[in-house]
Structures are given as C-alpha cells and as structure tokens.
Length: 286
Image (cartoon, rainbow, N blue to C red; front, side, top):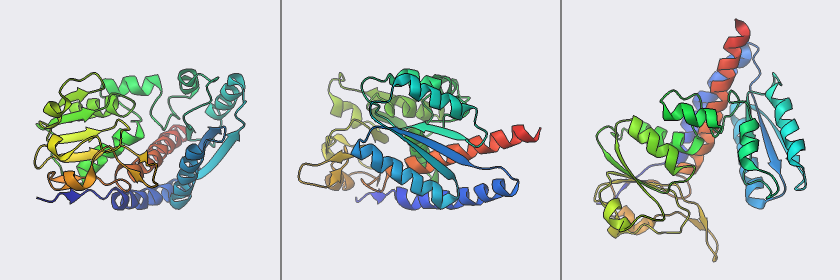
C-alpha cells in the first residue's frame, strides 16, 4: 500500500481562488478588506512567516499592513497599538506574530485583541466559543486540517482519531474532531506506550515538533496521517514529525512536509479575515 498524498498546496490554491472572488465582491460593495500584522523584533522565522502572509493577502486582494516594532517595544506600547487597530474601521483582522520577546506577556496581548478581529482564533472568547460549538474564528491550523479532511472526502464521523500533542494545535483539533463525530484520544509527553495508542488511529494528527518521531510501526495500516510538524534539520532542509517515506507505505492518506498543512494554515487565515470583513460589512449596512 502506498498512501495518497494530501496536496495541501493545491487545495489551498483552490480556496484562495474562491476567496479572491469574495474579496472582489466585498470591494464592489465598498467594503475594504484588511489584515494588520504586528511583528515585534527580528526573529528570522517570524519574518518569513509574516512575508508569506503578506504575499498571500496580496494574491486574493486583501490589503495587509505590517507594523514592525523594535524588540525593545514595551508591552504598553504594543497594547496601545492593538487598541487603535481594534477601533480602526479599515482593519478587519489583527494578527500578532508569535513568539513575542520575553518581556511581553503573550496571554495579555492576545486578550487585548477584539474577539471580532481575532482572525488567528486564539482569543479566550473564540477558544471558549469553539468549546461550545459556536465558533466565529477557529485557530487557523486546526481549521486547515478539518478543511483538508473535508475536501479529500475523508469520513470523520465514527472514526477513531488520535492526536499527538496537546498544545495550540492539539487541543483545538481534538475538539473539532470530536464535534465532527470522531472518538478522540489525545496523547502528550506524559503518555505511556505512545505507539499502542497511535496504532489505533483511523486518523492520526501529529503536532509535537520532533523530527520523524512517528515511525511506520506506529501507524495503523490505511490510516489518514496529518503531519503538522515543521522541523529544520542541522544538515539543511526541513522534515515533519512523521517519518514520511516509510509511513507512506503503510498509511492510506498522508500530508507531506512541506506542502501539506502549512499552506492551509495561511489559507484559513485569509478565510477568517474574509469572514470578519463579511460580518463587519453586514453590521455597517444595518
């Protein structure tokens, strides 16, 4: 058995084409669609992520503004900028690129963003609404995973989903899978006999940040394997949390790294921004 490749890049391109049409329609109705990104400091990886998001916005017609602040920016100054953007009618979405410098409290910063403009989906209000099944914005990476499963026609209802990792991806994706009708097992650093759990998963989602930690022996034959990991290797290049080539010979479906979940994360950021713009335009028209 050789797994089918879940081509996140191709699926994301299709979604972006549809979003471009919707952005054009919103603009025809005289509603500007804008995403403001805040980058504090000069972390190279963060700068690349922000650049990719700006390019993606441009592709679909979303206006993006980057507020690049020095690393020694005070928390009060950052909060003041967020407050200004909260009340700016030209801003539909606000994204603070993480991580922030150590002297800034990330929890307080995310809490300062208006839940109506929190297109990254991490505000406590949006996480709470996700928990009760009444979400406005879902966190982008879990949202993208669910979209991949949907587009590929993979049945979630009744499946046993195993999520490895209980962080900012693992927690929300476990909730979303459960709400979609899956029976969900969540594994983390304290889980004993990890392979015993992963081998039971019809759907296996891995988000831990450890290169190639999931071997072929840990995967149920025919399983859907979603690899969220992006790990930079000492010898150059990147790999996922899944040992791709051996696992591909066991799984039924698998996401590559790169080109799997990553492009979907940015696509869902754009979709959340359009959702926000649509909502704010409807309010303005009332």
